[in-house]
Structures are given as C-alpha cells and as structure tokens.
Image (cartoon, rainbow, N blue to C red; front, side, top):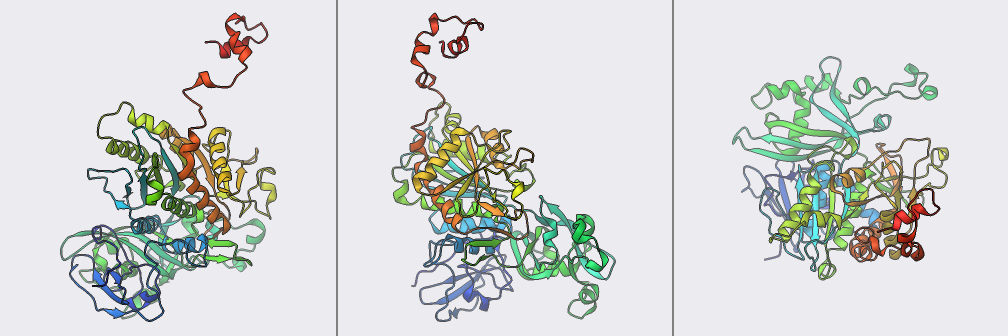
Length: 591
C-alpha cells in the first residue's frame, strides 16, 4: 500500500481548519489538506497521485470520492518542509506562504503547529500528565491562539537554562462585536470594534474577508465543535466619503471615528433580503437568538464555509482581513508586502530557527532547552491567559523542568530561570525616507540591515548592556549584520513583551526585531533579506548561547570581577571617611 501523507486526526474534533475552496481547486492549494465545501474534510495524497478525503465531525466515517491528481500539479509542500526554503527560493517566499495562511492568531498557530508536526514534534495537552525525555521535541497550544514549542538537549542537566524566543501572533484589526446586526438603512452592515492601535484609515476601500474561529453546536447530536473559518473572498468593504462631501480631507487629514465610520457593508438590503435564494428563511435552522444578534446573511456565509446549519453557530471570535495576498515586491524583489508583518515575521523566523536547531544531530549533546513562545494579545497589553503577562511562561518553564527532573531538586525553578535567556522578537521601525526627522539620527535602522537591537533607558525595552552584547556577539559570529535603535528623546517610545516577560519571570531579556515600514497599516513592508538574516541569527542563538553565557560571569562571582588590585589590597588600610580622597573606591572594594 502506498504510504499516505496526512495530518493526524487525533485532534480533529477540537481543531479543524476550513477553507472556502471546493475540492477541484485543491490541486494547487498549498496545504497537504483542505476542506471540501460541503463538509469539513482532510485530503490525503499518496505516491500514485490518488487523493482521498475523509470527513471530520459528527459523521467521521464518510469517505469521499477518490480522484487522480492532474499531472504536473503539486498538492501540498514536500514532506517535512512546510513554509520553508524551496528550490530557487529564499526564506521570504516561505514567509509569504505562511502569511497567506495565517490571517488570524488561530490560523497562525495552526500553521506553526503543522510545521512542527512535520518535523517530528509531539503535541502535548496541558491537561494531561507529561513524560518528557532528553532529546525530545514537543509543542502545545493555549486557547488555540498561542503556542509553545521546545526541544530538550540530549545533554540536559538539572538547572540548565532555557533559550527562548518570544513573539506574538496578533495584529491590529477590526473585530466583530458580540452583536453584529445593524438595523435600518438600505445596506446590511456589520458592527465592529477596534483591536489594538491600527492605522484605521488604511482599512478603507479594501476588499475584505472574514476569518477567525467559530463555536458550533450540532442541532442533531448536541455535540460542540471548535472550527476555524476563513472567508477568503471579498465579502465586505468600508467605503470612504467622496471628496465632494469632505473638501478638507487632503489639507486637514482623515479623521476616523471608529464607531461612526468603520462599519463594513456586507450587501445591499434589497439583495440580502429580496431574492428567492437570499431572503431570510424562517426555518428551525436559522431563527432564534443568533438570528436576532446577527444578520442571517452573515451566519449563512460562515455556515457555508464550515459545513453546518446557520442555527448551529452559537458564538465566534471573528475579524476583518484584507483579501489581497501577501507578495514579494520591489524592482529587485527585495520587499515583502503584506498585512500582519508585525509580528508574524518573528513567529515565522523563530519557528524556522528552532527547526534548524532541533535536528537529532543538533540536540545530541546540547545543553538546556530550546524554546519558542508565540503569545496572543500583545497589541492590547498581553494581559490574558494566552498573553505574555499571564502565567503561560512560568507555567511552561516550571512544568518542563519538573518533568525532566522527577526527583526533587533544590531551587530547580529559580535556578532554571536565572540560567535562561529570552529574545523578545518584535518588528522595529525602519528609517522612513519621507519622514527622516522622526528618527534619532544615529539610530535609524534600514531594511536589509539585519535584526535591530532596541534600547530604552526607561525600560520600555528590556535590553541592557549584557543582553545586547550577547545577542550582537552571536550575530557577528554567524556573519549577519546587526543594527541598533533608540527613539528620539523628544518622542514617546512603544513597548513589547520584553519588559513584561523579564518582569514576570526574572529572565534576562533582549528586545530585537526586523526593520519595517508602515507598522500597523493594513499593508506593511519589510526587507526580504532580513528574513534570512533573522533565521540565521536566531539559529545561532539556539545553538551557541549557552556556550557564550559560560564565558561572561555577571552574578555570583564578585570576587572575580576586574578591579584595581592596589585599591583592593589596600582597602583595609584606607580611611572610609567620605571626606578622604578615594574613600568611595575603598568602600566599594572593602570586604
């Protein structure tokens, strides 16, 4: 029997991704799976080019018709290399594929986990007991919008540190309100609310889809399912006001009132409710509380995507998304054009750095634990169960260390954290050529210039001299460029998960990121070369940080610090009176 290539169905009931494409379109689809339009299903492709689909859900025994893959067309990535470097392509092309899949934090986490599974990572459940081994590779999710993946060195010993890269999966966007229905007027509109600090004027006049997760309760079996949905066609739009009705818009700027101006138009009411096929049908499937909270047309769009009745949809977390695909652009193909670069670039590059550093050979004699943590809710403060301000980090480190050391070890958790190191990876501001005066002249990062180390004296970033040196040194040894950033002294500074992470855990942290323009716009831009720079730099971090850390002693060895020997040796003979010259030095070194 030809070997089959497929996702495991062990988690199928709790997490299934649906797309709008029908089976014939699946021949060129870039996942090794897709969903049929009429049912949530997975697709297998064997070596003979035969495709089989199998339903997932209440009736999981249904097997769909088999079809032969058209000659010369690929159905999915090569095994073991999802979103990775392909022949003749750089990492930026893999990033574009990842971005086109990862419309929401839920889809980003699923795409990340797909890549991990393809490389032999074992899925864990936080509700189960863990049995971990040296050399093992594991991952788990929290809320389906955040994930943790880690690889244990074959030479791990109790108290070894974790080398962590932290990033976040969320980006500013309009999210649908709990009650989306807008009554009155000639159009069917959707109520939305702002998530994060977006450049909201960039969302006008864009072709918008809808994506996120849906909770479905089967009216036939009363079973409850968690489904991901991605309506990847232009189903709504936020129109701007014509200049004839807003004469001052070019001179005074566009002033967006989110409550008043940002409700997208889904359809005209006459089309939504007037035709035989689109009018509201008062059936048992779609009347009731959900129909009063949401227009039936919206529920029908979602239901068609996930293969359920509109009345089975009991709740959702949905957002608007730009349907324009991410792309490589520029005269020399030097840029990545996309939404959500902040911060899916960091998710993608940290993922591939971990994969590079967790081969069997790389782990065989390695010390410590190599880990990525992709948090949710950074754009709104990180204070959630799946955010960096929650217990996710401390839970992970404490539990992993305990599972690897079943015998009681004194101070295991505290020793582990003090030996650990975190890179908070979040995008940085590139020098804007049309607004050069907004940048600090000596600290103006450029695209293609390598990862940017972020500094702030008021601890808006967690970087200090030691963590900056270590990260810079690893980059230089790996042969990649490194840049520095500090905000102008007369300008406020943003922040990241870095200060939150270091405060909650006590772990040494450095803030870094790839340089980009148009941050928080619906369409951002970064340098294609920096994707390779980031993967190379973060791979070096995983492989070599612990060795570097052994050469730089900061705490626990005051007696070994360099100092003026004559001052130290004569300290006991010198006056400690503050009026005597050198008294301060004497107090500093006296024992």
